[in-house]
Length: 423
Image 1: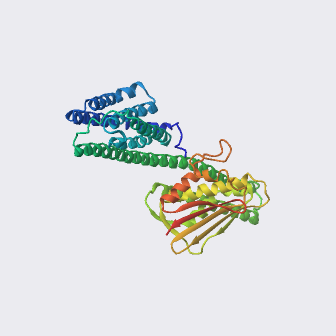
Image 2: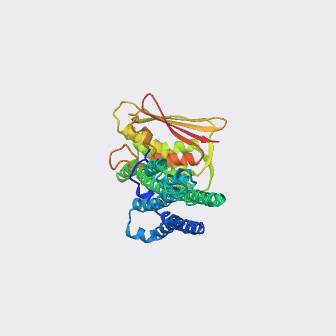
Image 3: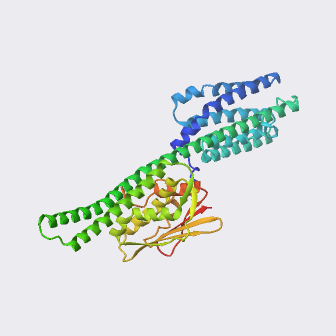
C-alpha cells in the first residue's frame, strides 16, 4: 500500500519521466493517424479533436525542460488523451460506441506514468464521464453519431488499433522499467557488499591488531626477564628460562595461527569463483575473530558441529561475511546486556538435501515492532554510530542468491536465526 499515495519517490519520478516523452510522441502519431482516418470519413469535428490533441502532445519534450514536476507532465499527457477519447466517444455513439471502452485504458496509463493513487483518481474521473454520457444520452443531449453511415469494419479497426497499440506500448515500457529496476538493485547490492566489506575489514584489522599485540606483549615481557637473568652474571635458573621459553613458544604459535587465518581469508577474498566451502571451518574461523569480545564480555560459545565436515558450493568471501555479520550481531548484543551467563549457541545439521545452521543468543531478543524490518537495508536497532544497518540485509541477500534462506525464528528468549542452504 506504500504506492497508494499522491507523493512519489525521487527514484520513481526519475525512472518514469524517461517514458513521458516517447509516449507523448506515440500519442501525437496516433492523433494524426486518427485525424486522417476521420477526414476520410468526413467526421470534421473528430478530425479537429484528434489533430489538436496530437499537436499538443508534440511539444512535451520542450514542456519537460520548463516544468520539472513529473506529476504535472504525466497528468498533462493523460488529460490530452482523455479529452481526445471523450470527443470520439461522444461523436460516435456515446456509450454505444467502441471508443467509450478506450477510456478504460486511461487509469492504466495513469498507474504506469504515475502510481496507484493517480490510477484510482483517474478511474473515478473516467467513471464520472461514463455516467455523464449515460445521462446526456437519456435526455437526448448527446451529439448525433457522425459515423452512423461509416463502415463498421473501419470503426472496429480504429478501435482495435488504438487499444492494442496502447497496451503493447505499456507492456514494453513496463518491461524496460523492470529491467532498469533490476539493474539498479544489482548495483545497490554491489555497493552494499563493498560497504560491508570495508566495515568488516576495519573490524578484522582491529581484531587482528589486538590478537597480535597481546602475544607480543607476553613475548616482550619474557624476553626482558631472560635478558635480566643473563645480565646478573649469575647461574641461570633453567626452570625459569624454560617457563619463559614455553610462554614465547605458545604466543608465537598464537600469532602464526592468527596470521594464517588472515592469509586464508585474504587469498579467498581475491578468488571470486565458486568453490567448495567448509562450513565447519568458516564457523570456527568467525568465532575466532571475536576472541577479544568473548574474553571482555565473558561470552560462552556452545557449538554443535558434525564430526564429518559439511561442504557447500559458493563464493568464500560472501559466505564468510554473511556468517560473520550474524554472529557479530549476537556478540555485540550480549556485550550490551548485564545478565550473568551470556551464551551463543551454534548448531550445524545436514539433511539429505540441505544444510541448516542455527545461531541463537540469550540476549534481549528482537521487538515484534521491528521484526519485519530487520532485513531492510540501513535498518538498525543499535545506537547512532554503532550500527550501519547493512549486516543482516547483506547476509539475507547472500543466502538467498545462493538458493538458501535466512529466517528470524521466534524463540522463548533472545534471538534465533535459521540459515538453510541447499546441498
